Image (cartoon, rainbow, N blue to C red; front, side, top):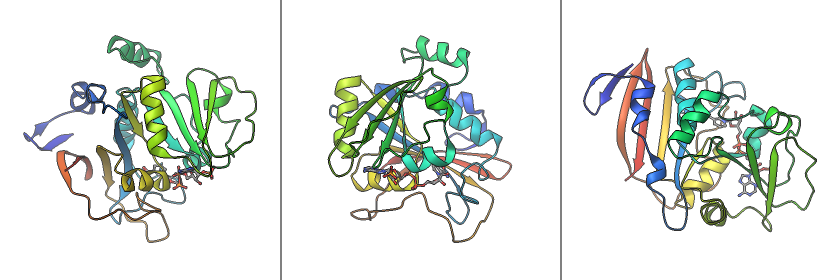
Length: 244
Ligand SMILES: NC(=O)c1ccc[n+]([C@@H]2O[C@H](COP(=O)([O-])OP(=O)(O)OC[C@H]3O[C@@H](n4cnc5c(N)ncnc54)[C@H](OP(=O)(O)O)[C@@H]3O)[C@@H](O)[C@H]2O)c1
């Protein structure tokens, strides 16, 4: 792949991410928060209801390698229902590499759910390995799962700022990667809780009947972003934006 900005030249996903150390930038009251999305050129976050058909294998590599750089990963219940996650860092070698960097071998998997209507037979819960913490507004009891499962209850809906503070204080989370989906992402930006956005733009169009990367509440105003890097491979653009 080519790095277009800054310092144009040849690069690789691992070269770009090897010096990326978001855990060194925690806020006092919450973790450093980055988000990662893939979109079509018409700005849509799904094709046929899924994110998978948007990006290339290189985008998947970016996603997998990004996961190795954070203490915790966060997703919304809608994304968990559709994507049916398994263990986030599946490779033993990558988990050992995380430990050498001073990170827990498995990132803490954080799920935000109003109704606790989750696919309990998905590999993340059923296969064991890894820890899962669900923030929910539901009083329902989850079933027994093979993975270590914790539940934190909020009233009405999950207060995302309070959830992030809890993760910082109670679980020592210094850096968290949110992988969506659009409704969770929209709330995080509206509440000013995001520091960085990794955005892959695939050279594809899909049409209007699909969500954008931000759904739900409006932002208080235009949010300025700074382009930290821009990479390209076969027409696919990999941008990293920091909050301006
Ligand atoms: N292109 C990409 O990079 C990308 C990335 C991720 C996802 N996606 C796609 O996005 C789609 C899912 O979109 P989505 O917007 O529905 O997903 P989502 O944001 O993951 O999930 C929405 C759900 O999360 C829960 N939730 C969010 N905020 C909450 C809060 N403050 N309090 C309590 N619960 C809260 C609610 O769950 P309950 O229903 O349990 O109440 C809500 O229905 C899927 O098709 C997925 O493939 C695309």
